[in-house]
Length: 126
Image (tube, rainbow, N blue to C red; front, side, top):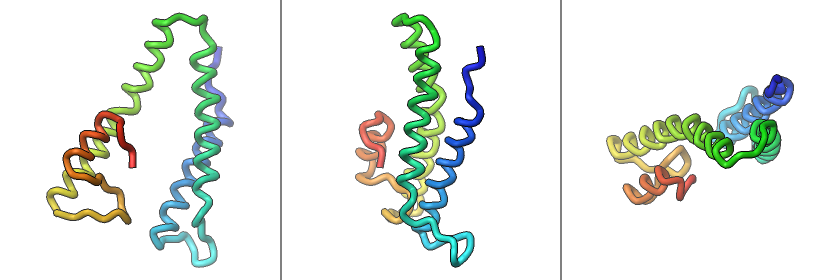
C-alpha cells in the first residue's frame, strides 16, 4: 500500500517555499522590486502544519494500533528530525561565541549556554 501522497508532499514543499520567501523578504531581500512576500509566511506555516498533521496521521493510523508501533513511529520521527536540529542550533551558537556576535535580526540562540541547553532539550525554540 502506498503511504505517500505526492501531490500533498509537493504542496507542503510549496508551503516551505512561501515561508522561506517571507523570511527573506523581511530581511530586505526580494526576487524583484515589485514582488515582495512580506507578511505571508503565516499562510505557509498553517498550510505546512495542516498537511504535515494529515500526512503523519495517515502514517500512524494506517496500521493496527499497538503501543510499540506508536512508540517506534515517534522514535523514528525524533531520529529523523533531531540530528539536523542539533547541528543547526550548535552551529549557530558556536558561531555566536567565536565571533562574539548576537543579533535578534538573524538566526540566534539567546541566553548563552542556558538558552543553548534549553534548545537541546526542546524546551525552547526561538
